[in-house]
Image (cartoon, rainbow, N blue to C red; front, side):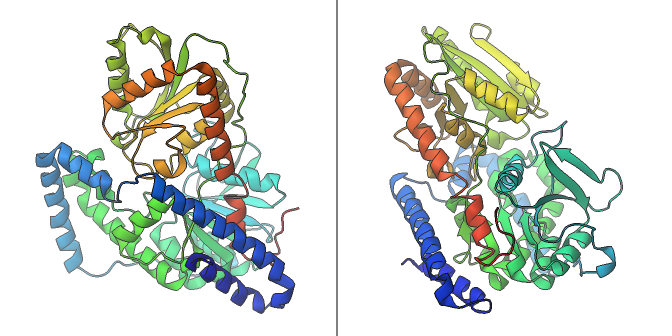
Length: 489
């Protein structure tokens, strides 16, 4: 038995001892232990075979790209940190429970708490959280999504794809978690004050915290998202917020480490490096991919032109939208570029600006704005290849869902991408290498069609199994213990 599995089973046994005898739960423990042992083995195998770059890879890579700019930015940050360190420790605005503000809700419920949530206008925020709500409802759980707000002024509730969403303050959230003995709370990317309040005032068996990236890493890893002027202007507020985040994470790691979940091993290692906390007793459970995105093995089976889909947020450089234009431009200079057509779905402030240099010779269509799940499924059905270079990923949900839908994947061998994409079935390129991205497109275009289809079908099967309900959300539910009264029907 691995150390991870032993710690997990020991905690569960201690938890259940107060409820019923170990003998009654032995089969449950054995089954659950086998599942975590299998997951641990998969993770170890991936790390051995993927030639994974170390957790400082992103910072080192961009330091080399622009040494002068990097040095200037590092100086700004180090000066700010020197001032912060000399000042008082971070102060938390703790939220103590109060019975007089309890929401009028059913109490045997899974509460999913998110800082943002999709609606009919904006489909993008926290889509990975929404997928959990959908699948939990399908499995028979009572689910209530909570969108955090400093106050309850304005819109108090809405419905999105059959999921009820309510707006609560942190005070209401903590009070409900403290009072509702039969309910369980899943906190996604909890802000520092809320995290510390839960650690101090809520029984630990009632909640888990799921971290997705920005909530547990040093913001300077993505320094290329800031200009020097922006960094000068924002560095103090960034450092104050980060010091609170890291202090809250350190407290949580010391007080309730088995309540913490990271969506990839890469993210857990990065959080350990950046915060200095010991997350060895935490868990790695990825986001689930949507069941809406099904593999259609007959779609586009007989075509002479391969259609390439790109879906990008153009707000930040870490999404590498600029590399898409450079890749298309380089491909346009090749004589056989007419074998490829592109559809670019994009949103964000720089979307029109980045796409302006696109060459006219290639067939490129664009769609602006986040789109619904049904519209995305239609695009998946109409395309063969998903092109998604990146500069930083803590899981890479869009790539995982495209792979699950049966598209051949071209991405970057960096951060968490190799944890989820099989190098023998997907094409993972060196960071910043436009030449490798173009060669990857050329390689897939020249593959015999039977081999091309076989590779993408196999990758789809692997990712759909790896990110299935049983290996994601169900494992999160198990963290609430075998005698959790909220049982799936």
